[in-house]
Length: 279
Image (cartoon, rainbow, N blue to C red; front, side):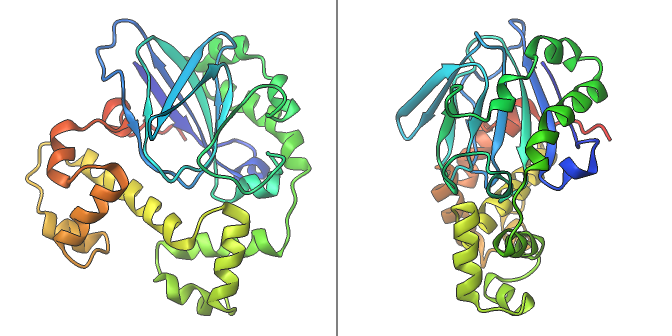
């Protein structure tokens, strides 16, 4: 199994794209074949060979297809089918970026998988997946240059307005301030912030903050495998009122208590790791 992540090389792309990433699983990898993907407020473009299948199970609804597709921000845990070997390259967008890029005909939208030439931007059809995957394992910067080149036409037609600007500012504050204080920090009413955030992202501020907290928490738990975990201290560190609050939270978002999760470790970060970053 190989994986990596790398930021875009072009600063104009970095405004909208958090990172590029890659996972390659071969037939020799003995990994969990049904990893679960935790909720995520960011959209991901998944680039894959045209004949490679994908299969997602969301609340017992199966979404399947072939080749490249778009995973919109999702508020629910998704079960992946990784039974067969595969190679995928991902583009992780910043929260709210799809609104500015007009990547989809109707925005905002969440909890959907978009595929097919009639649904994805025309620029995606131009991606030479053969060349991209030939470089993917050995020349990461070459892959990043190619992806930058494919995205530049999309970024050059980006749409910035007062709504996208407010959301970008709110995102910079959301991990450091209580939600109720963000309006004061941005010198506008909390109601305006909430309506604007929903308009751009399809999510509430509370949903987004919860997903970002979960991502930080899962990264912490991954980095402390084998350690004696003090859940009371963890609860306080990640902003929960007490340990029972943390237990209820994890049960609601990933369907498992802390103890159950530690036993199974079946989320994608546990299966594929906290990708090695190349910068």
